[in-house]
Image (tube, rainbow, N blue to C red; front, side, top):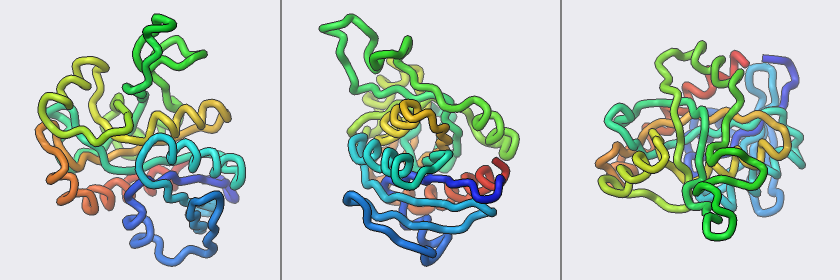
Amino acid sequence: MSKGKRIGMMVAVEIGAVLDKYGKAEREYDDYGFKVYEYALHGARLFVVHSGAGQIAAAAATQLLIAVYHVELVVNFGVVGGLTDEMKLAKTAVVTRVVHYEFDTTPVDNTAVGQYPGYNSPFLTLDETIVRKALEVDPTLVPVTCASGDKFVEGGERKRKLRADFDADICEMELAAIVLTCNRSHVPCLAVKTVSDAVEGGAESFLQCVNSSADVCLRITEKIIAEL
């Protein structure tokens, strides 16, 4: 990794895994309602912001990392729901594209569900070079499409519908906002996700596995960061 590089890590609900792994931060900040932790990591400066769940908080926290802390890369790791049989419990993936499945202006502009102004597709793509590097560092990672919205999706029919509508492999609650914000600021984004609740699973599985899945995800994410 380039010495002195500034990396932002956007964490929704998995902050416990970060604090357990890295310990006390070198510096802590309270900015615009968010807690930010600064660490030295592999020759870089790592700024970790704890946003809480949901798209709005994630967008605000990501913009904070970019505008105030001047990060050159935003990393998002975390736990997700699986939408296919392959994406089973503890399976870890790198996201290649994400769709905000609750964004819908179809009645007024006849665009596809999830398609933002200025985009030719509902899918927001992540940096291809970084995705390729992640797959080189850890070939066990699965490249996936993520469905992102402001709701926790219980298993069964609702998960299968997301799969059918968007050909998505996983679902969660923040990544669309993170990627959209990064794209607008021309800052690359890496997203590594580990399944905490499989296609038929839901809240119970999530609550049982969130901590262990977050630990797995952070370990793989750090390995990738070290090689960027």
